[in-house]
Amino acid sequence: MIHSDSMHQITLYTAQQKPVLEGDLRVFAVQGLRNLAGRFPGLKIVNHALYPNRVEMLLDFQRLDEDVQRVVQSFKSEVKYLAKKKGFADDSLWQWNYEDNWVLPGR
Image 1 (tube, rainbow, N blue to C red):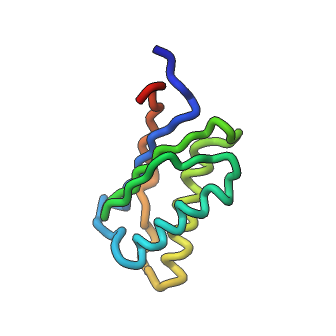
Image 2: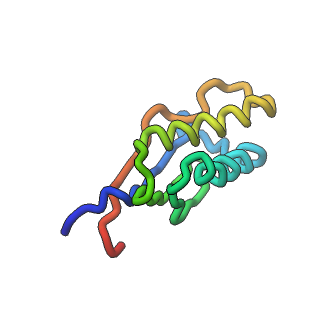
């Protein structure tokens, strides 16, 4: 079976996996997801799920010539920016690394 390099299952964890993505921070994460497609035309968010300690996204890069890391960093930066504007004082909202798995065709 051949891997499709266009479909990526991304998991982003909060710093120390603290359950902080609730209330306003959850709203900011949703807003960040909505803004990704506008910021990166051609990117398709196939699916997503928000949990108190992580964000999971299934992204299709087939029509986007962009680096996965850049898209992830853009999302994390936007959510952090929105949180700081609202008074979130902690500097480390996200873990530095993230999980990125290719999705096999037909799954």
